[in-house]
Amino acid sequence: MSVAERGAQPSGGTAVAGLDQSKVATFKTSLRGELIQRGDEGYDAARKVYNGMIDKHPAMIARCADVADVIAAVNFGRENNLLVSIRGGGHNAAGLGICDDGVVIDLARIHYTRVDPDAKTVEVGGGTTWGDVDHATHAYGLAVPSGIISTTGVGGLTLGGGLGYLSRKCGLTIDNLIAADVVLADGRVVRADERQHPDLFWALRGGGGNFGVVTSFVYRAHPIHTDYAGPMLWEMDQAPEVMRWYRDFIAQAPDDLNGFFAFLVVPPGPPFPEHLHKKTMCGVVWCYTGPMERAEDTFKPIRGFLKPALDLVGPIPHPALQSMFDALYAPGDQWYWKADFVDELSDEAIQRHVKHGSQLPTMQSTMHLYPINGAVHRVGKNDTAWSYRESTWAEVIVGVDPDPAQKDRLTAWARAYWEDLHPLSAGGAYVNFMMDEGEERVKASYRDNYDRLVSVKTRYDPSNFFRVNQNIQPPAAGA
Image (cartoon, rainbow, N blue to C red):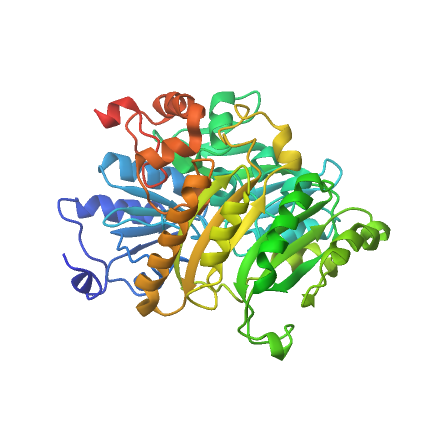
């Protein structure tokens, strides 16, 4: 069936070849949530994900209202030998929350946050976004380490590792995960933590969606309310000097201070001054979470290094920082990602970065170097599935634009940039920054943790039922 044919089905849903429609009807009536099939009103809107470059057509989308719905969806998919994907926020770079011709388990309606201010913990539903978590915890003067876009779902970001503004101070998101409730491939529900199913808990912390559908996460929260944060921008001809300075500075910076380096095009609107609009520049987006009375002193050596063309760093509520880039990166843009872990930023690497970073193909295209030292380094490389604990940065190169006609241009630029820098990288990449790049790339990203992940996969999902992900294949599935 062609894509055009899929988009023009009669109302009331379209039958899946070979599938008993009485079973579909029974499944549909068993759900407290909603089952959307091809041809149903709202199908095209329901199948869209954050990355507009992804255009997949599932047979049905189960909008689960609760854990019982998730169990029913898993059982239905397994019993009818259907491909299943798990969708939380839908932000996955490769579009792995959606699949062709299978069942999408959509968790968006399992959406809640329960803060325990005394224990400094928060329990979160699997369909919750980080903006929801930030809003709920902020009222208590708390924050959970996450990413930099608040519309991102908690599930995908957490299971891949979770890096962002608080990584150097508080560790990765997985370093703050206390427990998770998981619906397994056989329909059972288990709680995974340090005492119950500890092998599964180990694998969930970085191993992605390979092991089940996580319907609930419990996180440790930290006393963070107002940051001293924001971007500083410099002219592109200063980029080599800025990168060399940043390389040395961030390696010795206190844990309270984070800053990711970026190449970017200045958006044509406030708060950016008109004379900088649409200029290609380099910058660092800072986040200081220490005592506010020490903020100015902390930034004296930064501001004393090389006067920036723009300095928007100042006090800002943590949720406002977390959502600062939401409007710039709206759902539906075309995205093409390439990524690596980086141990050292050599002068040769800087030269190559400047070459490609000065040629951003569109206004929203960018390159970020996220520091993953500080608290991240104080967790052993085998203590969670995330292997690259000794690396200094997670690098991501992203071609972005709203126009589908730019797809080939974005892809070509990102690939050329990555191919030039990859020989100077640590080898693997943060799985949340990867497209669907194949088994060898997945193995390179987990290194000596891969075999243990295979063992856990074999125990909890021996048939590789959950395979729409950065897949870890059990031996039986690969035979």
